Length: 138
Image 1 (cartoon, one colour):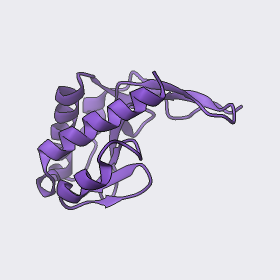
Image 2 (image 1 turned 45 degrees about the vertical axis):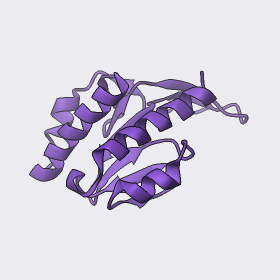
Image 3 (image 1 turned 120 degrees about the vertical axis):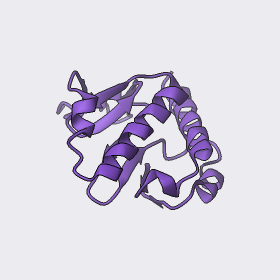
Image 4 (image 1 turned 60 degrees about the vertical axis):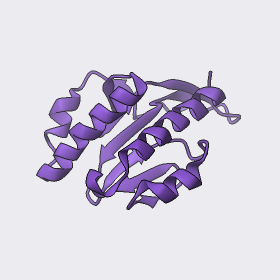
């Protein structure tokens, strides 16, 4: 079975965020890193070359595929900052309705800038997502 390419490593989170070319997005990434660390108690670590992750869990699917992943994470992408959360955390729809300007995919929430979102709602989403993942993968 193939190895996961996105694994926790010792690359510098600060160095990575400093490569973000747009100053406001770079500043938002540092702020987001601080908020997630403060909310979860987990230090920021690089996962692969482009994901900042916090905490980790080991998953194993019925297919036999298994690996490790961050409990919560983000990545500054070209058009937005991708937040990696559980796709099924408690009160997800209600919290997203109060979250502010965003787009969603299966497990990702995309924000253009931190000033568009409600930080206390973000904190609740993070905590609920972490709790959901830890309940699935204790």
